[in-house]
Image 1: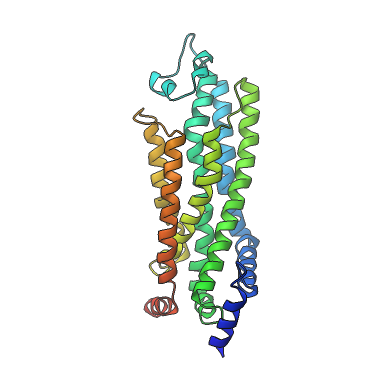
Image 2: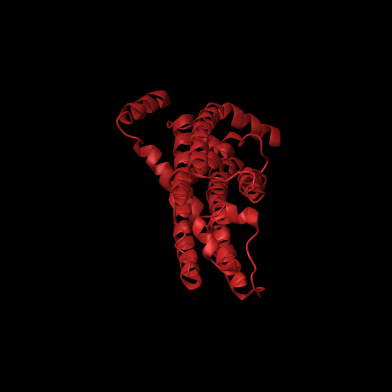
Length: 286
């Protein structure tokens, strides 16, 4: 009976992205992840800290900092910035440098953190409570459960990241207006928003899904956020040495590489997402 129901659901879903059962699971996960105070606070406060509080504190600090006459940006930093920066004063130059060189790193941490956190709640926490194994044994089947959960976590991460970018735009826009510099948004930022951000959201989600049988608790799963942030932080901080600059071509190449990696990890996690492995893991923990 269960196999017949599963086949019927698959037949109904051939012409649709999700069948009714999968849509219900997506809605349930979205409500479960964002509906509880502690989870909602984590998913809101961390992005706000990264894209509003840190930039605002920096902008206030740089505007109040005493400046010696004739002070200029370090030559290494100035070479990586647009040509018009040479005509700006010291404070304006550092504002543009922070916005162009470090704020992209802060923004890209948002999809990583929100993707990993939402996946930890949707996969690991449900495995801890025993409800994930129950879902896998229903008529939906493992692949449907995996697809629905991955979708809900990725959609939530992308939504929060887009909202965070709007908050960041307001914060930096006000700072740019007060400092008298050009509006920060460029083609590089467009690529980050349209390509890198959703790719990192999906990457973080499937990475957590791939490790669901390897971690012992939700807290341990949440700790993976630090490992996922390290490569992004390393790439952007290395820019400050003047070795390279993340231009449009580099960002496009990274986006393609991330998309390919997403496909590989998505398929690997899907193959590993089977009741036998999850049940075996649960028995070992008991």
